[in-house]
Amino acid sequence: MSEQQDIEQLIRISAQARSLIGDEVQSLRERLDVPSRMRNAVAKNPTAWLGGSLVTGFLTTAIFRRKAKRSKHHKEPLIEEPAKKGLLGILITLLFTAGRPLLKMWLTGHFKQFLATKIETYSAPYPRSKNLRTNTPTQ
Image 1 (cartoon, helix red, strand yellow):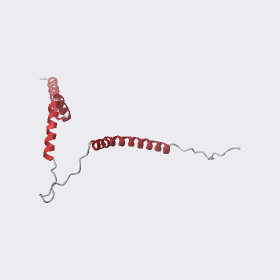
Image 2 (spheres, rainbow, N blue to C red; image 1 turned 90 degrees about the vertical axis):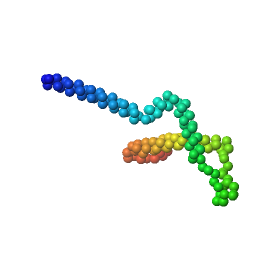
Image 3 (tube, rainbow, N blue to C red; image 1 turned 180 degrees about the horizontal axis):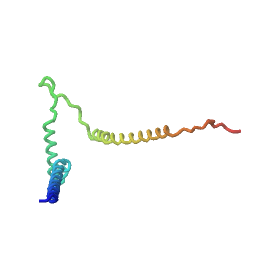
Image 4 (tube, one colour; image 1 turned 30 degrees about the vertical axis):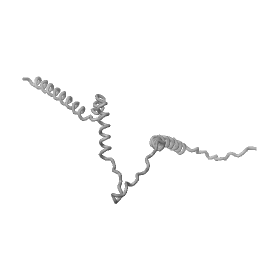
């Protein structure tokens, strides 16, 4: 073989190697992209995922549920737990829980506006006039 043919063969071999490496890299990226794989799995079978999450939630609640507190002497009745919230209490709690981020965003926006106006007033150039008369009525 001539030197030119050797060079062409090496170029073909390196092109094939690059192609194989590119395919392997793409395959590895797809296998390591866990969020995308999870989205695809949930999209393919959403009812199974919903059912599995419900079962997992119930099992977790059953396993980690706190037991009722007893007094030091087992003959005495259970220590009374605080009364549960009624519907109004739940709604108020939900309102505060949902309203807190909204209030935070609103306050943050107003604080940014306040700071922006203060920065503009401090960075504005002051007049360098030597005549600093006050407004006095002329006669």
